[in-house]
Length: 177
Image 1: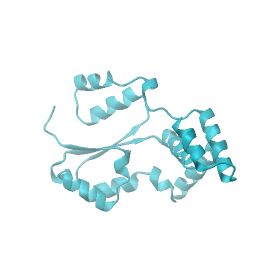
Image 2 (image 1 turned 180 degrees about the horizontal axis):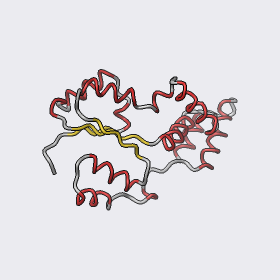
Image 3 (image 1 turned 90 degrees about the vertical axis):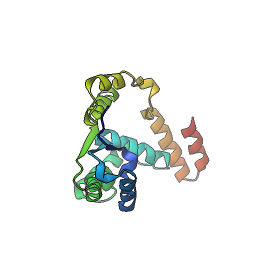
Image 4 (image 1 turned 30 degrees about the vertical axis):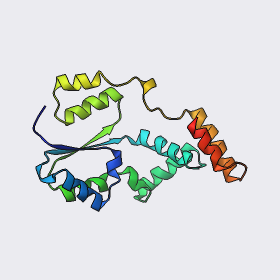
């Protein structure tokens, strides 16, 4: 729709360190970019998701304890909190891309609302934004998280693995189901 050039960043790109960002800048011809759009999930959705990943890898703590530990680390400015604070990521990108405007979109609404806001930041007109929004899959078709019951079962499996009562193969099988 336009001749403007943008770099769109998803969570996966936020993990890049200096050399990776510089490599990306070279690929994106940084000097000719008009804007960089970075998306991230809200902390209220990121924490449970990260906890679930921790559970899939053998973690045994309950969500409340995990969230408390992460929130305390964020307040104290300690790791692993840095993964939830994108200031360092933005500083790094700013140091590589210079004066190119950086927009950060916290994805905290419905998928349709998030897509509409994202398209708006990218400079798409109303017609294009609406057409995109009309094609968002229903909640049942999207990548959904584990239910509370599934997480409780995985916690039990992880605790049994920790006591040597089950192999890690049992956890892999439970996650695949």
